[in-house]
Structures are given as structure tokens and as C-alpha cells.
Image (cartoon, rainbow, N blue to C red):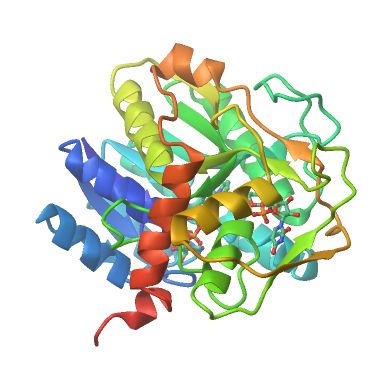
Amino acid sequence: MHVLVTGGAGYIGSHTVLALLEAGHSVHVVDNLSNASAESLHRVEKLTGKKVPLDVVDLLDRPRLHEVIAGGSFDAVIHFAALKAVGESVREPLLYYRNNITGTINLCEEMALAGVKAIVFSSSATVYDPSNPMPLQEEATLGAVNPYGRTKLMMEMMLQDLQVSDPDWRVWLLRYFNPIGAHESGMIGEDPAGEPNNLVPYIAQVATGRRQELRVFGSDYPTPDGTGVRDYIHVVDLAIGHVMALERIAHEAGGVQICNLGTGRGYSVLEVLAAFEAACGKKIPYAMHPRRPGDAAVCYADPAYAEKVLGWRATRDLTQMCEDTWRWQSANPFGYADAPV
Ligand code: NAD
Ligand code: WQD
């Protein structure tokens, strides 16, 4: 298939572009590079020996988006492009609503004009109400608790409404849990701008000496060791899930599919820390801090539907997630900024 990948230069996007090329598909990326470097795609080119066309286009730039999509002959779109930092979304909600929602409206309108009515959408476990019992099934109560999460929920609803209005649309809403890890080559990985918000990128930067110590947010949760529990999923497993959803979309009639992508297994902050120490062979300094506002104690998926509907299940364990993160981070301590210019 010929696939437009929005946000394809980013963390999950670049791994998915690689997986798509390895599966024999052709890709075209649009990304405004607001949170990514074109170097990620240069490295995908090196790994695959294939060209990755990139248009540096903002989804808010409607005329340029029109040029890309109208002339593209795409079979489907995988839509990663979004802003994703929870704290920033609380400080700048309108930025998030405009970027994520208007960007998605522009994209879908241009897709409809070009007759491309198949989309795989990056959703998130953040759309579930935190008071749900675990594990989270797709039918669990929805209710995001921050502006970023609400943009994801609104985009899910928009895509479902669109499919009702025009039954030709084929929509896959993939709800990811906590993506970590990197491609096993160590050539591509997560490269957060500034201070990382998320646990594993932070630990990885402490391990390289770029940050002093990890702050563990909360040691009094009702969990076995008192720290928060999450369902960490290897980014390559996630990328493969996208390829499988895309290949399903090619053969199905219109409709909406909603699918968790997680492992079904939760690990605490201290368990992740221990696994990372084993992977990098160093002690990671850390200190206990108060809970981070808005954090849930425990969050993990029921991944059964993904296995039933897609035949997909995560196969890479926490050890591999940490080893692959460390391979990437130790070879690229400053991310893509380490690349020779
Ligand atoms: P990322 O920031 O690395 O990738 C997003 C990409 O979109 C970036 O390359 C950015 O430059 C681009 N982008 C943002 N706004 C754009 C716009 N208006 N026009 C064009 N390009 C734009 O993030 P990621 O971790 O790879 O996440 C990809 C998707 O998955 C996002 O939609 C995110 O919300 C979702 N998601 C991520 C996680 C996670 O923890 N990483 C979890 C669940 C869902
Ligand atoms: C994991 C655990 C923290 C950092 C976020 C978004 C969610 C989704 C994935 C996009 C928690 C603890 C963290 C640190 C810590 N993104 N922690 N010290 O919060 O589960 O999910 O990313 O959709 O929407 O909210 O992930 O990696 O930030 O935190 O102790 O420096 O690590 O308290 O228990 P989270 P995370």
C-alpha cells in the first residue's frame, strides 16, 4: 500500500515508517518537525536502503496539505501528528486544541476530497476514565482528565461521527499504553526536547549523566512497592501493530475499530528502574518525591481484543525495552543532535 504518515519523523512515527518499509509498503511523510528531526528518517533510509520522502508541512497549513494529499495517490493514512505533553497542554490548552483538532479536521477534509477514506489514528490510554477497574477493556468508561487527553477523545469522536456520516470511511482507533524502547539497531529512538516528561527517557538521561537523579513521583500508592504501575510497550511492537491494522484496512468494508495496544502487564517505577540498571550496568540515583498531580496509581491494558481482531500481541519484554533504550541512548546521548552536520 502507499501510505501517508503524518508525524512520521517523530518517535513512534519513525519506527512505524521503518516497519512499513520492511513490510513492503511505500510511505510519504508529512511532519512540521516541531518535535522531531529529519535525521530520524535519514536513519530509516540507512537501515532500509529505501528513500523516505518527507514534506515539512504543518497540518494547519491547508493549501500545502492539499498539495500533498491531492497529488499523492494514497491508499491510507496513519495519523501520528499531534502535540502530546500533558503538562504543556494544561498551560496552553488552546495550542493543543488548535494543533490536534484543527490539524485532524484539515487532514480528514483533504482525505475526503482526494477519496482517501482509510485512517489509522494514534489514540491513547489517556482517553479512559482513571476510576475504571483494571485491566482496561475497550468498552471501559471514557473520560480524559487533561486537555491533551480531551483532544484525543474529541478526535476519536470526530472520526466516529465522520464514519457515521459516510460509511465508506474505514477507521482504526489504536489506544496505546506507555510506549518505550527503540529499534534494536540503536539508530532511532525517542528524542524528547528539553527535560523529559516521561519515566524511561528521564532514566535514560540519568544513565548517561545528562541528568542528576530520577525523581520518583509518589511512594505511597496502593501498589506492591508504593510507586505507580504502568503498561510499558516496546515501540517496535507498537509499530508492528500499525502495520497489521493497515493491512486489515485494505481488505475491509467501512467501519470503526477500537483497539488497545498494550502488553496487559503492569510494572512499577522501581521495577522499571531495576530493569534499566540491569540493562545499562549502572546504578541510577533516585529520590522519592510527592505524587505528580493527575497521575493514576495503576494503569494497564486488556490486550485481548487486539489479538482477536488483528492477531497482534506484544512480544518484547521489559528487559528488551530497557536494553534497546540504552543502546539508542548510549550511542546518541543528545539524541539526533549528536548526528554529524
Ligand atoms: P512525537 O512528538 O515524537 O511525534 C509527533 C510528531 O508530529 C512530531 O514529529 C511532530 O513534529 C509532529 N507534529 C505535531 N504537530 C504537527 C502538525 N500540526 N503538523 C505536522 N506535524 C506535526 O510523539 P510520539 O510519541 O511519536 O507520538 C505519536 C502519536 O502517538 C501522537 O499523536 C501521540 O499523541 C500519540 N501517543 C503517544 C504516546 C506516547 O507516550 N509517546 C502514547 C499514546 C499516544
Ligand atoms: C509513568 C510513571 C509517573 C516521570 C503519559 C501520558 C499519557 C501517555 C503516556 C500519550 C508514573 C512516574 C514519571 C518521572 C516518575 N501519552 N514518573 N518520575 O504518566 O503513565 O503517561 O505518557 O498519550 O497520556 O500521561 O507516563 O512515563 O510520564 O509516567 O516517577 O520523572 O512514572 O508518576 O507513575 P504516564 P510517564
